[in-house]
Length: 400
Image (tube, rainbow, N blue to C red; front, side, top):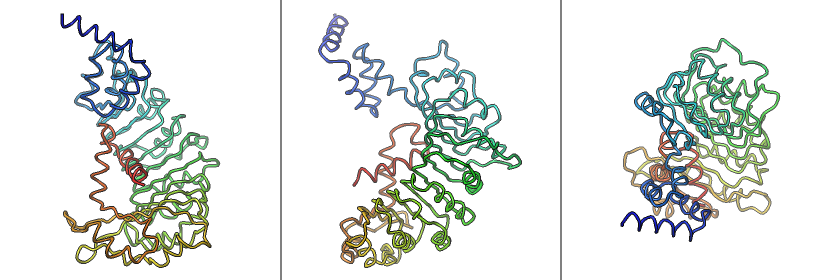
């Protein structure tokens, strides 16, 4: 009797609610796995959309790879998965070809042999996001070959993925995918990639560059890359490996080549460096958002005295400039495990000095990290460096 009643209720739901509306409702539950499981049991017509979100992320490791890929016939989630993370796998496992709908591929903690370099573009030719996270390559040319063989690639992330030699020069015919618009890098050999990048005859319309751990040996190639990209660059993040590189960066980076720049983030750099860059390049009428880090000084008070607030006021509020900066975010980095800095302290001590205080925000680094973790609900995203920094920028935009 209960089974008949459930069938009748399911029939009523299917008849009274348009399928498009059901899909929209289920889409709102994309991050709630319990709710998605419940939806998949309510009606047969709800199963497909529920599975679309339930099985969107798949993580394959040496521990579960054989069990998952060994199921015959291939389970439905292999075709439903859109984001695939391969961890501690030095070869492409048999059965991975059944993942037919992958849009984002993440390779982590692995050693990429020749079979991976040649096999991944064949199996995952349609991916738009590709991340190499702590992946060891035999040669730099292998990385270039792999990236250039993904025709639909839009976002490429390289996180601490070294190569053992640079004996082979990348083939001269190789070109970056024409849809590529975002580069995220943390690499001790960033300059090697950028030197190859800067020699290319044509470049895709790169709109976002995020370079972390920028060392002294990287700065000149970073400056050259910014100049090459020019007017298509809209978002730039530079994280200096050491404060001592600030002066060299100021002499090398020329943002006047990027008139379409909307946001500039400077991490681990002196506030006066950001201010000097802004003062030097006031032609940026498009610049809307700037971010920098400030470290705590004595008595856990941020070193905001390093900013010349009067010059900042003149830059932002003067009618003689076309500057459209609408938000300056100061990230307060605490040296101790527990920071005593409060928003009230900062605002009462420093904001009165600035006539532009309406656009200045102060964000403690630890608060920022907590908010970022809340945003990252996907199993893959929580393990992806590229997803984390993208979520950070999205969090800042949503807070405006």
